[in-house]
Image 1 (cartoon, rainbow, N blue to C red):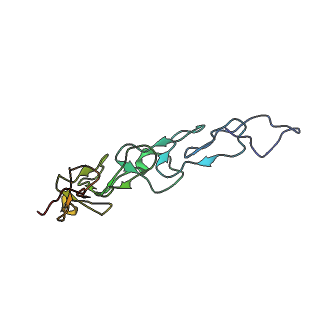
Image 2 (cartoon, rainbow, N blue to C red):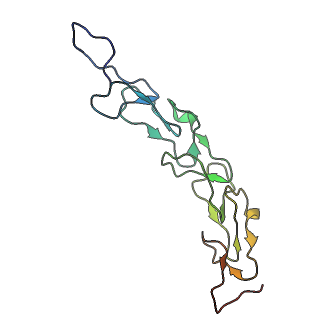
Length: 149
């Protein structure tokens, strides 16, 4: 809620509810803020906005409905934490729309690409490198060890 710019008899007599798609987080706020991208506020008078659901994100601010939250495309994922759809990090990929996580490249493979949309981004490690199938991808063999395959 915020104080309206008009006064009655010299003092403020009421507070006006923020409209849907906006919020006022603190006591004494003098204006409402638009809900940022990846959030929405469907009802008036909110002190915060609701995050888009897991696997979704939005591009616009001031959203009034979860309809603005669209499924992440393949190669992207969302945890539903207000950060929206993020590219899958290197050594991972996502095949489906609306992914909440990315799949790690299998053991013996890795990828330098972000936003991988298929297992095809995972390539065999080069000689002198290995991978355990985790987010670290292909790592150099330590001194005293080797891999020539």
